[in-house]
Every structure is written in structure tokens, then in C-alpha cells.
Image (cartoon, rainbow, N blue to C red; front, side, top):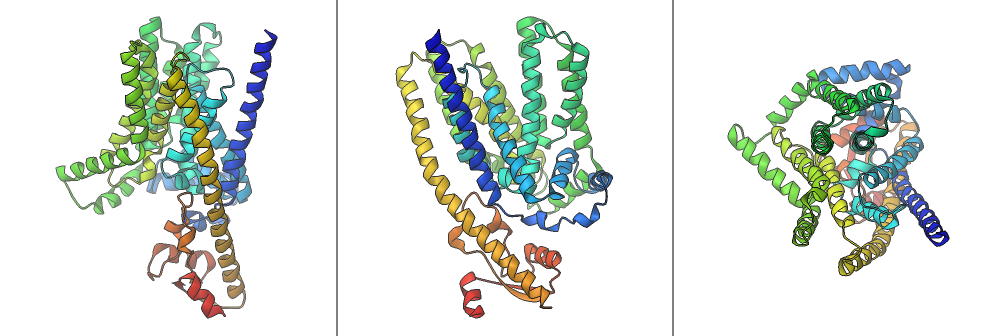
Length: 453
């Protein structure tokens, strides 16, 4: 018994060390990600009291988007110093790893290898990590959205699976209703997938126990309310009309074109998970595992497919719209890997060795990409200092350097949001507005340095 307790204690220490490493790793990348894109247009002067956040969000709800909960989160962080967002966003990412961990069954207490596997999956296979996790505007809409949704689903599964021990049905039902509103009022396709997951787990639990608990109904009802508030926003119609106007095709061909693009996105963002799930599913069926044991995996797979293919209703979705579906597939895949039995020594060895090898590779990848992020941040800061110095002297028509192309990394969204030699490029206009410039001429960094000399 004492030996077992010592083993648990050792695992617990390593588990929390890994959590600390996970936090430090994402915090460093958050720190080295500057404000960009729409972040630069945020005007703190428009906000004179906390009520202004809700007043301006109501205007956006009526004219542009129904994602009010996440937009309020974005506005709050935009009013604060960047270091506050860096800290909170890093904690949010760690919380995402823990929520995925909580939704995986058949794990040991303080399962270090499982937590490592989740972190490796998120860092290497998430959709547009630079846009959905690191960029302030994207993280508030996607990372924070999926964390709120998974937080709700984790509570939903816990209360449902432990319903017989719950005596406070009324307060739990009220809590789940309001939590459900927040979860449903996130991203259109991801929140819809979350509702599907809740319904499927409710049906599976009813099939097993022949009982429905009140908080499951109130929770799903709350999600439906939040979802309807989001999708019925008047602003969605205006935004949808603009997006449709940019489509190449119309009628049935528009849907065919969208479907082909979704297939391409599935192949790019989800195929690694789908391949592992299919291989292990075939292996488990060969080993005569009961299909019921794989039910939770199939629930998340179905939600991932639905969350992706529902985008056929949307003209030209951004790649980051697949972030939620990718997380659902990640949970399904990690669950399948976790179900590898200790008796399957070959698969266990492959799993353990694979995680260790991936962690070593991740270390070198992290340091290389981190160095490039630091270089990008240095050039962004130097350019801003130059702009402020010149405007203080009364110079408002400036020649500015673009970022060096050799620093480009998959963990930075800056290159899609850098100034351009195209005079009318929208980021050039953003810079003109933010710094009060009359004109901008963008040139390669080397040319700018030569002229400065």
C-alpha cells in the first residue's frame, strides 16, 4: 500500500510539473505575439464605463455578428494591458488541456503520459494555432469559446454520470441552464456540435439507466437559448450578404464548391486524427471489444463531422472555423489511444515511445519557432518606435519596413497582417488610422535600412 501511495505521489508531482511547463510554454509564445489586425483598431476612448461594453456590443449584435459572449470577452481584454491577456490566455490554454483530460476515460490518477499526449496534439495538430490560440482577436473567439463549451460538457457529463448522488437538483439545474446559455452562445458551428454531443450523451445515459435528470434538460435548454440568440442576430444577415457577394458560384454549384472546400479542410486539419481512430477502431473490433466501450469516441467523431460539414451553409468560412471540430476529433483520438490495454505490450511500447519521441521533436521545434517569434516581435517594436519618433517630429508620410520573410513561422499570424507594397492593402489603412498617418510606403527591411543609412 505504501509503495502504491509513493507511486501516486510521484505521478502527482510530475503531473503538476508538466502543467507548469505547459503554462510557461504557452505564456512565452503569448508574450512574443504582438497586437495585430483588428486589435490595432480598438479605441479605448470609446469606453467610458463598463456599461459601454454592452452598449457597443449591442450595436455589433444588430449590425455584424451574434457572438456576443465571446466579443464581450474580447472587448474586456482589449481594454486591459496586453500582459493581462497573456496571463489569462495561457491559463485558458492549460484549462483546455485539463478539460480534454477530464473527458477521456480509462486513465490513471495523475496520468502524465495522457496529459503529455494532449499537449502534443494541441501544439502540433490544432487548426491555425497562431490565429486561434495566440492572436488576441482569434483566441477570444475560438480558444475561449471551446473552453466555455467543454467546461459545460464536462459538468454535464459529471452531473449525469453521478446523478444518483446529487441531492440539490434545483440549484444544479439553474446553474446548468445559465452555463448552457454561455456555452451555446459561442461559435455557430462549434456550439451546434456541443448541443449534439450533449443530446447524444443524454440518449446513451437514458439507454443505460432509463432515467433523465432535470439538470440535463435545463442544460440543453440553456444551450438552445444561447444558440438561438447567436444565430438569430440581425447582424448575421448583413455579414452573410457580404460574404455571399464574394462567392464565385451561385445556386447548387455554390454548395458543391463549399463541400469540396470542406473535404479539403478535413484532409488538412483532421486526417491525422481520423486515420488513428480508424486504425485503432479496426484493431479493437478485431480484438472483440464491445462497441459500447467506444461510444464516447464515436460521439465526438460525429460531432466533429457535423461541426465541419454544417459549414456548407456558410459562404467561404475562415480556416479557423474548423478549430472546434478539430478539438472534438482530438478528444476522440486521444480516447482511442488511451483505451490501449496494458496487455497489448507492443502497442503500449509504441504509444510510450511515440510520446517521448514527439516530446523531444517538440522541444527543438518550439525553440526554433520561439526564436523567430522573438525576432518578429523585435522588428514590430522597432517599427512602432520609428513611427512614434517620426510623428513626434511632424512627419506623417512614412516609408516603413516590412517584416523579414526568413522569420516566418506557423506560430505567427503577423505575416498575414503585415503592411504591403500594395498601396491600398487594408493593413496599410489600419496603420494610417492607428498612428494618424497621411501615407505609407512599405518596402523590404533591407531596402529600408540601406535608405536609413
